[in-house]
Image 1 (cartoon, helix red, strand yellow):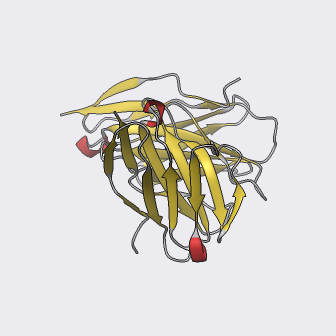
Image 2 (image 1 turned 90 degrees about the vertical axis):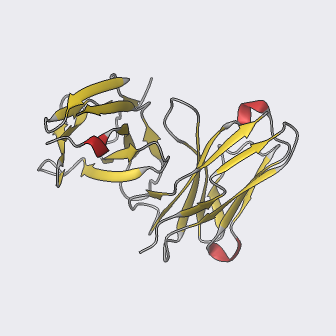
Image 3 (image 1 turned 45 degrees about the vertical axis):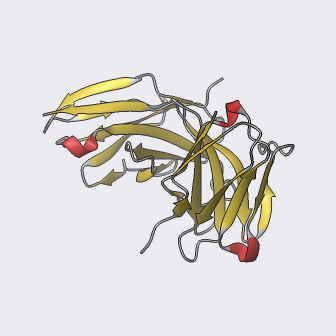
Amino acid sequence: AQKITQTQPGMFVQEKEAVTLDCTYDTSDPSYGLFWYKQPSSGEMIFLIYQGSYDQQNATEGRYSLNFQKARKSANLVISASQLGDSAMYFCAMREGMDSSYKLIFGSGTRLLVRP
Amino acid sequence: EAGVVQSPRYKIIEKKQPVAFWCNPISGHNTLYWYLQNLGQGPELLIRYENEEAVDDSQLPKDRFSAERLKGVDSTLKIQPAELGDSAVYLCASSLVNTDTQYFGPGTRLTVL
């Protein structure tokens, strides 16, 4: 079974509007971390935001917020006020275990295109 | 602060030829990772180093792939001989410790003809 599922291969959003990128995960470990990375056409994976499984509040970083719904095992990324520079691939990733684990498991990604 | 540096950015070789990729992690990061990213997919871990020790190389195809991290800083990933199926992006990442956020370099895009 896939550990990380991103069901949207591609998304369009109008500039200045908000967009939600979906991510669901599967783990039986009570301790885990969820990450979102952005990969523009240049190829570099850029860290955006992190949510720990025990964090009480949803993570926010500037225009990025993570809508963490633990019972539904979802960790959707919300980008507010989209900009043309947000056009890129977006990957959701999970790290199981918090104390000794390191391995990131990535989803297949969502390609976001911001329209002017 | 400089990010993770990788070179070359692009490499085109013929099958059966050797190829090497180089990575310089963020200063002070003792954990270094090599990932393979096939087209349309997320990255998959090949090998992880803590300082100069390869602590997890279970996903590295050891018949043709090798890696080293001399002095616990820079790392080199080698393929010999390359096959057509090795065409992909090879990403290097580093983190302060093995449980910290991983920061990625720009990757090396390998094309094997």
